Image 1 (cartoon, rainbow, N blue to C red):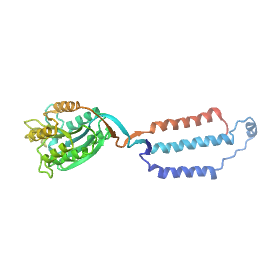
Image 2 (image 1 turned 90 degrees about the vertical axis):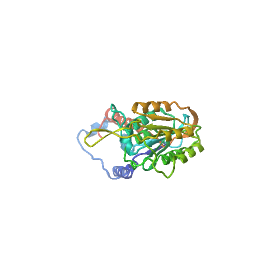
Image 3 (image 1 turned 120 degrees about the horizontal axis):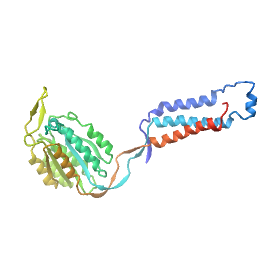
Image 4 (image 1 turned 180 degrees about the vertical axis):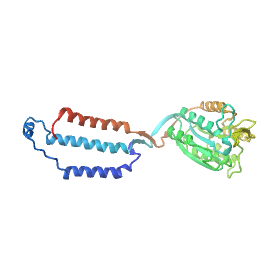
Length: 329
């Protein structure tokens, strides 16, 4: 554990200003002197602050102001390389973001396939509390969007931000997408390594065929669970006038079944949003394996800890001024 600041740039200009203010207060500021007939009487009655009292109040005020700068910089505890014993599996979600994922499959639930896939993936991530999860996206291009991590907040943010057009939507590079997901798991020390491959289309001509990706998965002991999205009759889309149009089916379950069977996984077909939810629930019942994993940049907000300290310093100063050392400054 060590401390970092999310907005450390704040220190570059606020700290010099703070130091200049302190220097001015100590070296150049002159306390005004007021002479009144009753001044000597008040002084004898000790109704004035001594030099010691002023110094204590000055230190408290300075500490409070510096604490405000400290809080503005947003302190965070960072646990970037902790070893954690968990009871789980290493999982990579490989998600299709091609153009056909804009279609929907249920006239009663007109959420697009990509929206349903995002919603169910987030629910799945929430359930797998102790499982490192990574994300790979594929369409006309392939990208490893997130490495294996236990930071569920980052994972859910990444999934929430997915949209058609994030990658070239005019193809489905399934083989390269699967190979990239396998590559994310090849150095994993977990006994159980899983790829959940979700797609709604037929693989496009690819630099890496799905047969090669299957061999790579088998070589590294990775099971692939495939989810085919879309009914046998095809999905539905909307024309510019808002009319519902039916699109033809383009899903080839034979390829997905081949991938799953040869890697020791299982193939599923989600004809509608409800079935996709059931599929993720089924996969959630995977076997557990005891392993050690590194947390990938896990941040814990430290704001609250220091906020209460600053509040205490401020309250102490007010208490001393109003109740303990009342008098003329």
